[in-house]
Image (cartoon, rainbow, N blue to C red; front, side, top):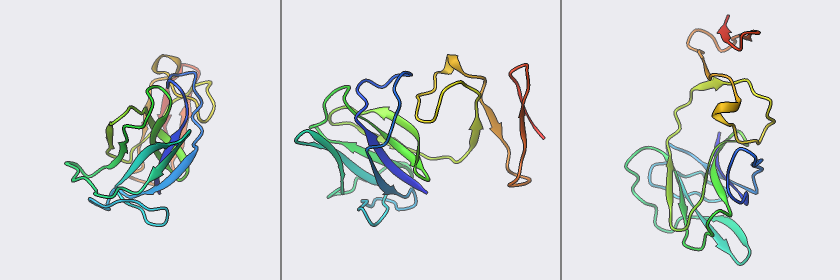
Length: 157
């Protein structure tokens, strides 16, 4: 379901289209375990080797204070060159600017929110260039209808 992703984006902003350069299995329930290409874990290293970035297995998994997914940034990372984050079913949904020697813990909380915007998949969403976010409620049914009206408002049917 979840995976770690990175892309050599340069400085991350609303004009950047994030297209994953690499994907690595991730599992929030795999507490204090490392990921490999064939086994999901809760943490992975992001390193620069030569001119290329890559994910690597964590030799000594860190004890995370929360049940989350961690990208552990190596000191080889160059400022404003790469971004990393999480994908769900292959589609990136949260990324941050990577920095040298940084650790970023993502704590997935599966909630479904929608916005209306003129952007395309992969674009960073600007808070000022989109509608108010609307939380979709699946508590009564997995099949729901949400309507967006001409007043830029959502309603769930």
